[in-house]
Image (cartoon, rainbow, N blue to C red; front, side, top):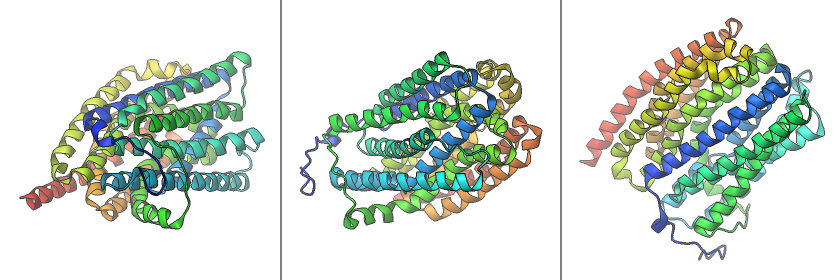
Amino acid sequence: MSADTGIIFTDASNARHSALRSSLGLVVGKAAQTGAGFAFWIVAAHATSDREVGLTTAAVSAVMICTQLAVLGVGSAVILSVGRGEPPGRVLDAAFAIVALAGTVLALGYLVLQSAVTPDTALTSVLFWLTFLVAAISGTLVIVLDQALVALGRGASATSRYALGGGVSLGAAALVAWWAHGAAADVLMACWTLGTIVACVVGAVQLRKLVGYRPRLSLRPARGRPLLALGLPYQLLTLTERAPGLVLPLLLAHTVAPEAAAYWYPAWMMAWAAYSAPMLMGIVQFSEGVREPDRLVATTWASLRWSLAVGGLAAAVLVILAHPLLSLLGEQYADSSAGALRWLAAGLVPYAVLQAYNAVCRARGRYTEAIVVGVTLGIALCASALAAADRGPTAMALAWLVVLSIGAGAVGLRLLAVLRRVTKDAR
């Protein structure tokens, strides 16, 4: 029992799953979410115009940016704190309170900013504002839930919550498409938000069943400050990984055309399904590196091998089936974006190297170095893709791949040097 919260916990250490099981569980869960998400965009593409789809994809990207900012590194701080033996109840109470407040503030700030800066493409209905706000809060909570369950050795629980959430979102979109053609972007956004709410609720129930956690949220500075101090550097590193892919659809929608975002986003979303394997395995690699620092080298190579195996299989499927998959959205999507999907899928290998490097930097506390690398690479990725936007999605994806590969080559050499140093220190 936690003296601070009065919460009873089961012994999570006795119920921990292996690192591989947690990794694969997370990958399967994200695959289910991505599959349902792809089906959602298929339904959306047939339910309304390219413009409305483009505005919805921009809104979804904005929500994801808000969630990544609102996490404030708290998820990483939970992994570090629980891995070092701190009471989970106290850590989680402070973590969930911080990110719920941050998600609310950032979502409202974005909505006001969007209305002022891009009034021609801004969605201003009450339904959109409400669903955007709820999506940002629940999405941020889901991120911390994921990392809390990884820290407790139960990452495999992701499968059921993402499958349920994705299924609900898809079902809502199908109902809207059946009811009336020409759905507005705010209605599609509401359908997408339902899935996030369900994933959040299921995750809370899982946390209670698996480890006996009952939330008693607390914003007391004595609890929140240590988490923020611990997590913010790691948050900056995470943002360098996620921001380029999230910012680009927004930039396309508001500076090029909503249709440009509509054609780019499905290719990027499907490529991200493959990229999720090294990203999620990197989270488990980080968690295990904190718990067992003496096995960091072995964990890193094992994580990289599985990232390439699982992610590579998904990437190969995308390369082979790029045109048929995109044609499900419509022939105009397949004709415009099949080449882009193939080039983006080829980026799985350099992305896996980047994730392995970042996970080692997290476990070793070398976040400053990784942040500098990530910011430089992120700016180069977005700039190169935007510079090629007038030549279409395929040219954008090729530019993205070239820059990502150059960056991965540099960090791969640095990763080898760091791992050699770890091995030498261990001896």
